[in-house]
Structures are given as structure tokens and as C-alpha cells.
Length: 206
Image (tube, rainbow, N blue to C red; front, side, top):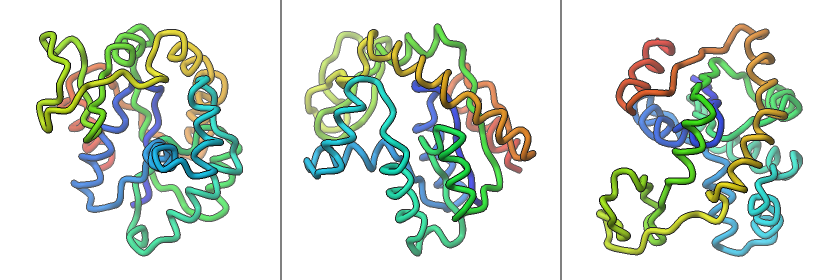
């Protein structure tokens, strides 16, 4: 099963993707994770990606498409995959169609105000990457998993988040129409708890 997860920043795609990949036994491929590991390792492509991400802009298509294509050609994708964070534009979707057949596109739909609150309140463990929200931390600044410091990602401040959501609306929202026209779009209400959203997605995927 070749599945794409769509949704604005903060819609909870990453959380759902991990669970779905486990349930359907397919690899979870997150372009965000690929870029972050390259940024951490200070690779040339990572530095290029960082300059765009820090400003809340999208990484250029040719860079992203090549990274995804190479990843989908690996052995673990032969029975399917779950793409999270790609494609983000219609041109990326068209490029993907040239080397892979997409069978289902899940759109996790969350109201704009909720997205802003979710993202600006997000805190991430500097060591293990575990994600938290200030509403549930009770003032704690350390990771419950490994005890390391919790930080706010550079691109999670209100100004950058606003820019990211604007970029999303302009370039990614047309994807919904693109996949709707192809008859593979499944829209799910993402404004609920993790379990409820997960069950809704599984019902739609069958």
C-alpha cells in the first residue's frame, strides 16, 4: 500500500504516520526527518535545506524529489510506504507519479487557530527527539523519557509558524484538489485525540 499523509504543519501527521506504518507494516518516510538528520550532520544538502527551513520556506523541489526518489527505491519500500511531508506541491506530486503509483492520500484536516496553538506550544527533547506540548508539561523542562532538556525548535516560533502556514495554504492546499480529481483522496477530521484520529484514518484506508 502506497500512502501519502497530507495536512498543515501541526496537524499531527508525524504522530499518525508512526502508528500507521506499524499497523500496515510499511516504512514511514518523513522528509522532515531526512532533512533534520542532514542538518544535524551538517551535510552540504542539510545546510541548503536549513537556510530555507529557518525562514519558514519550502526546500526547492529538485532537492526534495531526488531525496525521496532514492529512498523509495530501497528494498523496504517494495511492499509499500507511507510518505509524510511529501509531496507539498502539485509539481512534486506530478514528479512522484512518474516513478511511483500512489494508492491513497489521507488529508488530516485541522482548523487554523488550533494549528497555531499546537505548534507554538510544542517542545522537543534535544537528545532523543520526543515531542511534548506545554499544556501537558506542568512546568517541566526535561524529557520524561531520557531526562534531557526540552527545547522549542527554531521554526516553531509564532512568526515562522505564520509564514509556514501561509506557504502551506498557497502551495500545498492545491494538492487536495489534485488528488481529489484522481479519486484517491480521503479527508479525516484531525481535531480530536490521537486515538480517535488514528481510528478514523484506519476506517478510511480499510
